[in-house]
Image (cartoon, rainbow, N blue to C red; front, side, top):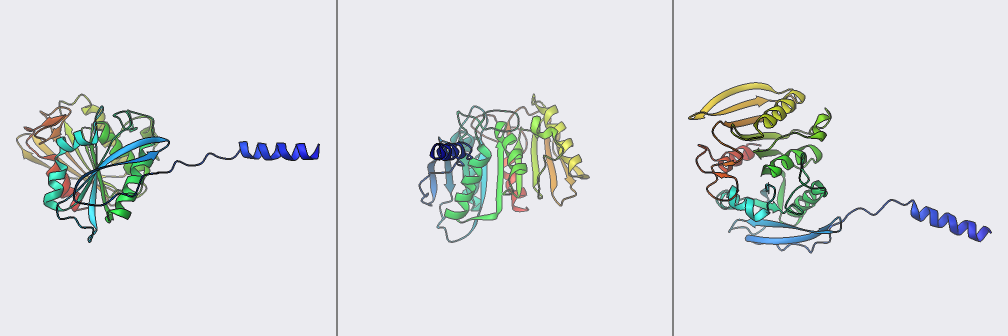
Length: 281
């Protein structure tokens, strides 16, 4: 009976043990110039991402890295076309990562999935810092629509990003109803919003909530071109919020010349503007 009781205790102990955490099983990337696709196992599923390094990349210098996230449904290569971020990286000498959402979507604030995309992207950034010598102080995120929402989630739930650039996306959804759901360190924001976007009211409401919670104060408004405006708010934690509003634009990436959700006639180029913003933060 004592042997049986001991055996039962051992079994019970095994059954109550917490599950092992998800780990990446990706092979170590080979850093090199140009475009390379990588895969890793995350939470038991194969995940993929794409890295672009400028032509002169040799790993001898720490470079900034920009994580660019796609719309739903979409892929990393599709938002690479829309954003033209790889061409910008070649001119300005930085690294770009385009993660692929699982089943064409990312588990952002409103939709579109249930995978641990925060952990997945944190793992990718870790690889970029370790293997590609990315500068951990110059990590940035942008995305459009579903990807823009994801940039807000990353800003709140990680401490990796110095600044984010949501395009046609919002700080909204159930998670954001908690007043404590805010970055734990300063994360500056440059937001692009179209007045004809069906989500424009949601974008504005999210900005107001973000600015209120971070005690942001108005610091100026400028008309850029035509009826495009730029507003600046300085926040209590030292971050800032810059918003470009394009009244005649819909759910699009302003200045994008090709690809999904592009608007070449918006009057501003979001890719150029966000990179200048990133460099300043």
